[in-house]
Image (tube, rainbow, N blue to C red):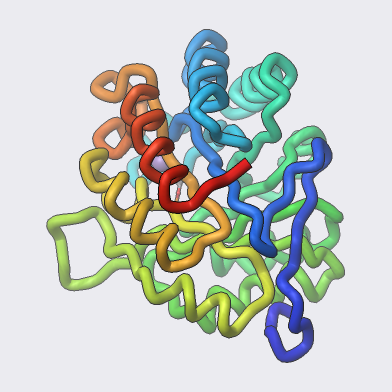
Length: 263
Ligand code: PEP
Ligand code: MN
């Protein structure tokens, strides 16, 4: 059960390399929206690790709004992400779109369910059969209760390792890509024992807004952050406008470390 009533203590998720998420631990997941090449993912992995990230993110199967947009390198992308994991020792998180791909995710440390699939109940049920951490992102127009019920779909199958992610929701405001619901963070902590992270990159869609929103999320008590970082944002194949350069990421990490020291 995701409800705090059934589980007073915070859930702590321990990855294979010992990295802990939740219960007072703070982790930063960083990397490109999409894996584009071996040099790109390994280079970014090394720079985010040097700046203090403890988990590498990178999309291989991409849920793009247009079918004509870059769809990700798919299987090849996963292989490159695994190479980056091997090279840097960083655990990895990447999105799944189709349960038929589950066998490809064997070596993936955290399987991400994107906002668009938050209510893909058949996918959630299949992930519930695994014994592997799942990062569940809030849907574009879903309430917190709906997010928790989706977590429940995974947990009902016996997989209790769910991380909740606030990544912005659609509101009347169009200046930003989405609106980061800061209050979701303390509310989810009140209602649930599951770890809660925030994704200021997808919430804002604007690299200049990532740092202030990341700091706001930290002050609101998140257990971690998901940040998009690209070596050359203006040429990124996906989400360049919201991607931080490795330098901007390192600078942001310095600010976070000052207010919220982490390992
Ligand atoms: C992503 O993390 O790259 C992504 C597609 O996020 P979301 O599902 O939150 O839009
Ligand atoms: Mn993205």
